[in-house]
Image (cartoon, rainbow, N blue to C red):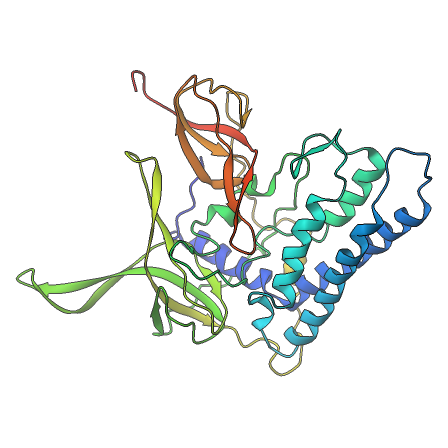
Length: 365
């Protein structure tokens, strides 16, 4: 599997640029415009599709679909004045994303295509046309600035750069989202400002923060004498003022088969002061169509993918398709597991997923 090191300069520049893009006024305005196109098309389907055809769109979904459009409008009015609380829990953009997940899940809950909240087969052409319009408003990482729910297990939105830079994170079972096109020249990541907070502290300003572990020097190995060095501890994250600084996921523990969540220090790299003057700058670089840098395309596994409930064909580390950070060690002959994924409210929900072999176990293990 392609690894993206946050100590690599190109990776750092790409992640920094992506976080600015995902929190830009222009991207959210485009999301709003694309959602309106879908809304009109869905309402037209409700009103005009013949009752005699099997495919039907439920009118019961329209209130939620229109509430999402309203939330986008409200959030954009606030963001264009430089107010970024719109991503806090229950505020406009956070609510729009929460409702979007419900709308996408129940777009077409026909038993031939859908089971227990999961799409199980490709939609009929007319439904898929609506699905394409709906997905046009979706971006990988769009929840970047959303408030992380308080709690001991509350980890940052992005713990590894692969969640943003691995092309496999943009590929889902029945649809694919566009991988971002980077400018040919990406600006350098700013030097840390000197503002440092710890997990659990209140975030003092909106902006992009880097998780670090701070090593303190000692006299005779006993007495701390001050911070001497800091080391990157994961992916940059966008944190909104007045939220709580989250935890990070530590290194993968081979013996236990999972990674522990850890407390970290967060140092401010960039304070977001965009739009405070009421002006929207040129942000066209966020929607380039001519490739600048080519993304790494990970080779497909030699073994076929397997799904939750299938028998594992080979012992080793398996990765959940569409969730590059989720890996498990499975022994040949065991049943492939499901995956518990947190939704926007922080609640864990069971998902049936595809698994791809990342690293085969050594013989005899």
